[in-house]
Length: 199
Image 1 (cartoon, rainbow, N blue to C red):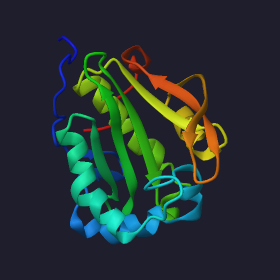
Image 2: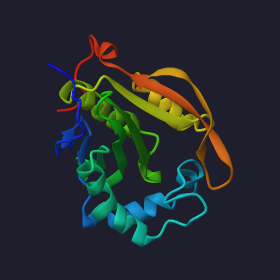
Image 3: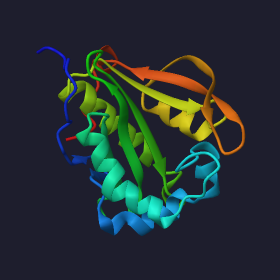
C-alpha cells in the first residue's frame, strides 16, 4: 500500500480505547471546552485562542462547531473530543494538525480538563490517534511537540513511545514570552511488536 500523496480529508471516525471514546466535538461540549480551556495551567502552556487574548465561551463555540470540523475539511488534520466511555464525561481534546500529505507526516496535540489529569488519559488518547494515523492512514511520521518546561506533556510523549529528537528554539509564543519546543516522533518501525491501541 502506498502512502497518501495528495491533500485530502481524513475520514470522520470514532476511536475507542480501554477507557475512552474519541469522537467529533458537538454543541453539547461547548461549556466543558470553555471551562477546561480557561484553566490557568492549560493557558500557561497552550495560549488559546492566541497569545494575549482571553478564552471566551464564543471561542469554545467556534472551536466545537467551526474550527474543528473545518480543520478536517481543509485537509489540515482531525480533531476529537476525549470522552470517558463509562461516564460520558468530557475529558479534553486530541487531534492531528499541520498535516503534510505529500510527505505523509502529521502532528498530534492534546490537552485535558483539570479533573481528568493524572490518570494517563492523555497518553491513552495520543497513542490511539498516532497509531491510527500510522497504521490505518499509512502516514510515515507523527510528530509531537511540547514546551521544554511542560514536564507533564513531555511525560505523555515518552509514555506513548515517541522518540525525542531535539529542541526547536524559541518556537512557540505563549501569553508571556516564548518557549522552546521539545520535538518527538513516532514512525511505523516504532510500532513493531506493539498491539493496536485503538479500534
